[in-house]
Length: 194
Image 1 (tube, one colour):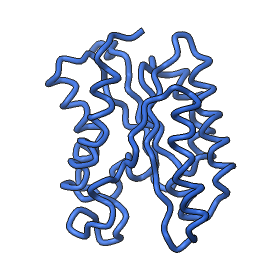
Image 2 (cartoon, helix red, strand yellow):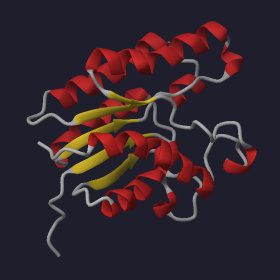
Image 3 (cartoon, rainbow, N blue to C red):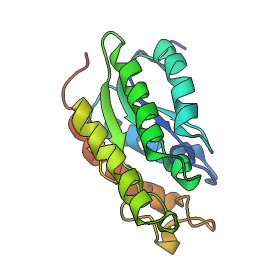
């Protein structure tokens, strides 16, 4: 079987992207995005590069390998949630995500960047939550990147859409996440790459 020559949409992410706790990886939102791409006649392939428990430091440590081994047309950066759970300094999280964007931008041709916004837990305090939330729109603006304002909008805090841990979406929750992501990816993939 010949390798798939379509350029990749790489979903660099955490357990939210990996599909933690789901019975079948095809229920995770990157696979659902693939179905939407196929239905829309978009000649891209979705690559799920999510790893459970990964921090922005872990994502940064993997990005060079991904860029070397995939023809990345679109890089969806979903990271920071685990940093937020651990109370990591928002400025450090921002700097690591910027490094990921910079490394992607140094490839030829560079991928289009999509940043998935995250929220910090309220128990970390109002100032931390505000600083953490600001990371994503500020990076999108500074890098002229597309943004998914909050990956889990419509899912976070809804018991019936999350697994027992209250953090990871169920299959139904993943379908809503896929809609959140598709609204942006659909626009980004309207024009051919490169």
